Amino acid sequence: ALGEGYSLTHSELLLRMPRSYPDAGPDMFWTVVEVLLASGSEPQSANSIEEYVGRKWRRFSWHRTPWNPNVDNLHGHMEFIRRRLREKK
Image (cartoon, rainbow, N blue to C red):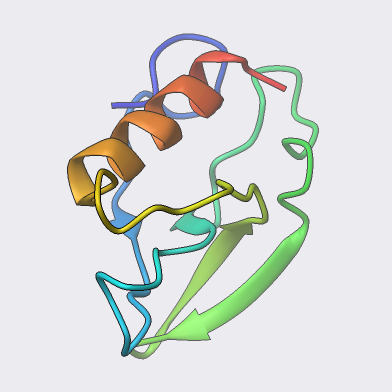
């Protein structure tokens, strides 16, 4: 769920996991291309369209740093994504 402030209320989410996970954490995330701000503009740092698994995706180049494999996990990364999307920028 994207919530209010976007052109869509829901989107599929693509994550790319590094081979060295969990020692290295995931970086960035991708949504369907149609995800824009409600104003029609592209979200901040989300102007790149890339193809993975035979589909085009909008890359959100938002970086979570630092990653500590002793405390960080995929659940925390998902919360990072939720927080960033709530910023609606």
